Length: 160
Image (tube, helix red, strand yellow):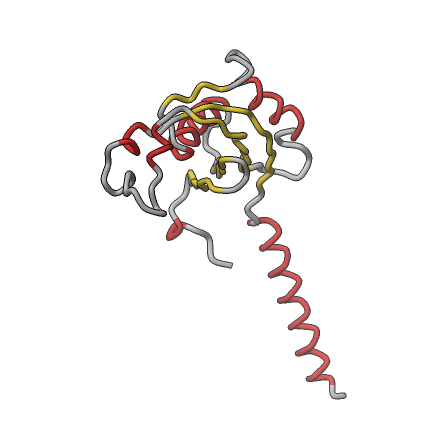
């Protein structure tokens, strides 16, 4: 092996190490918590909308009446360092507390999973401003939504 090939290898190793350091420094860090709540909601339009009340195997008119689900929540939020910027258990307990003033069963009226996520985002953003948040809400862990609330547009990202 010549000195020139050793220098190239050393140079390549140094560039790779610097790249790893930049990636670590610029990494997007988030924590997530999950919890569940029993709730009742309805979709009034399902009773009369011909796209929903189809009288065939695709008929979902029953959704127009109050019905029960176990709503599953998963919330991810930006953190700015690795040492418990937001402590998991405290964050989860705070989120659960947002629903504790209600009866044992959440009364969600006509709200969809998307509406529930938007409402929850508003509360989280008041307490933890300037952080990207991702909220998943599902009915019985089976069907649901994922909504990302970014604080940066993708085209503003830092290139590494």
